[in-house]
Image (spheres, rainbow, N blue to C red):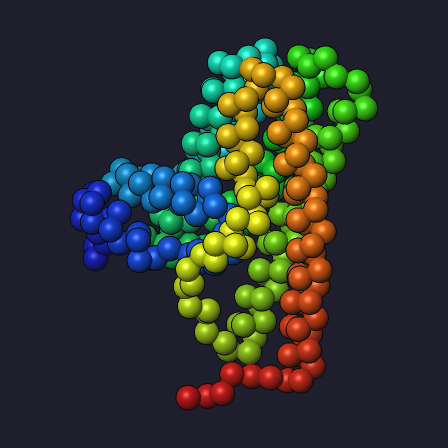
Length: 258
């Protein structure tokens, strides 16, 4: 079923979604080149069965929760790792699909964006709590190493909140001065590559190594350290961006009226 004026059929919906994507600038690699195309397929299919963006968000949350429950309670085996990866990766794809579906239907809502970010904020911390539980139950590690997932949870939460907050401040500032939305820009490959450690999709894929305990924990620890380092560096850029917004406001800058 299609809404009046909306796309007709899966192929038409999928084609239209190519033209309503968010800018690729600043996105991490898995999210841009794997997750967003998967989300586009899911959004086009969801449109055909008349799902709402919030329903897709709930499906994303359910898939992610299933993966974290399996990770927490099942033995740390190869099979468990495959199942966890599938659940988390699908949950992430549905997380991309809800926003794309909203744009396909003509625009989202504040309530929908709030719901999406609330679930994301739980996810970025809960995944490391699940890792902590799995390490404690299944891995032969000195207890001091259990601080790694705790630290990763803190760093991930700070990174997520900082990113969301700066984006919100920029959008509020643009609306205040009447500036248009920035044009869509292609991905900058160097910046995209530097964001690899912070890519949630890469974290999902590390669970494919769960059956090899030392390899998994070593890879997970490297991601934790790299994410912490990147967050420290990007926090300086965020501060400069916010200071620039303050300077614009003090200068009373506005967008010229055409």
